[in-house]
Length: 116
Length: 220
Image (cartoon, rainbow over all chains, first blue to last red; front, side, top):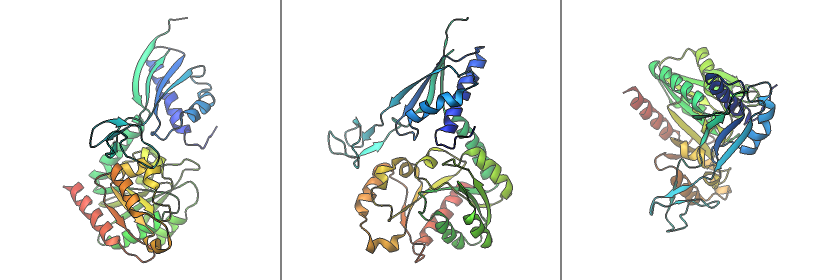
């Protein structure tokens, strides 16, 4: 089945990684997948959830519960060093009005662990 | 039934792609190829910019991998100009990834030159995937509006060079250049922002000089 959508290849990859580790650990079924998704990583957590079941069909992850931990992106102020969540159309620091620069917080996209 | 067991993984979903990208990058470098990942929204003028740049890259072999969801107009156009080009049709996927590039690169038998990889017209996903490039070139336009760095921060953050195309239209548009530049600089302190127009052919000497300098640095 081909689902021409943005989240398809990465959802497939998530299942592959979970399967690899399950097989390595001699497990025949994945019960839970703990995924960390930053809101800036470009992938919509709800879309991954939506398609997970369809794509997982017939794999070791078929009955797995997908737990998604979402991370809100934060900027770091180049003047006072505080981390903050940006307002739309602004990179301004709410504490000192300095300029915020991007950080890795919010760009996460990894599998933290699985339960087999 | 056996007991439940938690296995720590901590593996990035991008990991497999990134490893493949490193391999491709290494192979490009070994063959004297400087690879440019060209990103921009649909209609930003990615192919038109490439045509202007390639014309001015005298004495340098230029190669193009064209990424599109469908169709091969751009590849045909480039080939008609004598550029070695190959088409990738993703059939729906919104960005290029490393395995696709690996295959296309083989077809071009690359040797000593500059390879432009024109990504799918999209300001979101291409920025997330490395495809073996040495640099990322972002093509933005004055017609898209000056708020784009604020709305699509990742593309502006990751770019090594930002081309602002269609600048001949500035007199007819409301484009707040200060607001645009403020957004760009919050995200990216180093990438040069070069104003060009494919219509008037202005600004491209600077782009070509930047490419030549980066290519020289990569060779050393």
